[in-house]
Length: 299
Image 1 (tube, one colour):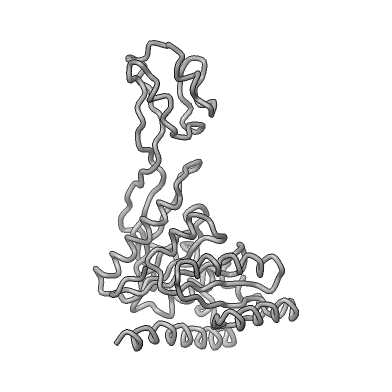
Image 2: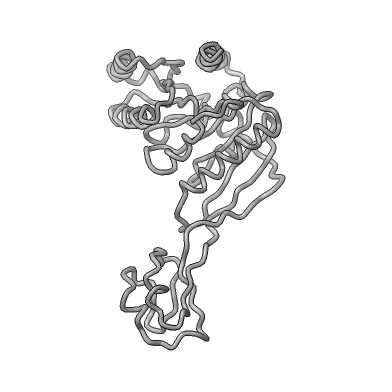
């Protein structure tokens, strides 16, 4: 799926709260001169909280159809009310757009064509600048669906922007889980980095994400965060990665500086904690080795 001109790293996690966005922001800082950033967690975006972007343009994103009624054409026959299975049509034949699922049954059966299916505004895509790199992010409207399509639009714009500006890397902050937005965030990806913590729940969900990434035949690496909260669970992660031939590019102990940096809207590198900076430097070296290895193999 990866573009020959641009390599994309998508940072994922099986569950929320593992530190995925924190590490994405750190990678953004380390690759500032060569990368484009994208926040693909459009349902609950928060990378902008650390990057404080300056939006330079915005674009309405339209996706998913809803029923629109033309009262002048409507003859109040009630056929639409009979076929609607989502209680989106009232007794006065007004349509509640929040309840409408866009199935189109009402438009199909309407004898006067008083109901049409129109694209709805689902969200907004922003092009921005940050103190590190150009940044593409988006926000899904309240109650809107099709977040996977919005994520795909963000990923595509980020890759197009990278080509336009001559950047060789796109760093994507994906959603937790394995749903449609995660699959969309893997579009064009070369490497997926899974952030996991040593708990039973996180390990279970990590395995599901890895299975998804490997289904698409993408390279995968793991970062273990809060590594010292359970040595037993850490060993489970390490053993699984060894058996699956998955590199662990970094291990980070539980550290309050993660939270202090977040409160101050800084990356963990800007927070100037020596231990975190040294460990992150090693992570970045290992990630670059994975990316550079593909260039050597392709020549």
